[in-house]
Length: 149
Image 1: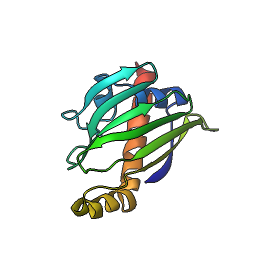
Image 2: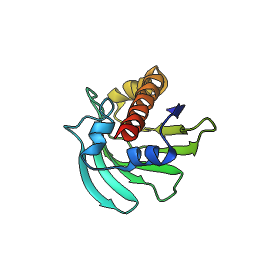
Image 3: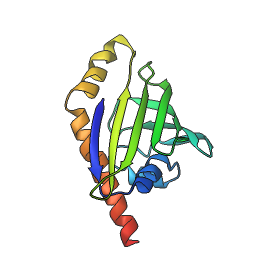
């Protein structure tokens, strides 16, 4: 799955939203992260391991996030309900008009045979557009809250 978006959030705000692993994470990502499955398993200064899922999704993942590069947040799936792995990254750059340009790219190869068609649809059907819209809304809302607060 690949998509790009522009947000009013600064690169620092985008990076924070992607790398915060406190109770703030489910609040920021309220439409794309199910708080009932969110579980921080381990964390260091520029990495974290967390269990996460999307609301109403049959899938969950345990991913290791790494943000040692200031412009990129990467993750690797270390366990999943679908029996597959996956990797992803988000590249964050300042936007000429203010805010940020965000480029997301991830895959979920493998998986159990009966779940492969659903995984294919998630990554190649209308889902990238829907997820892009939800991410943009979450990041814009987060930036507005920060400006007001």
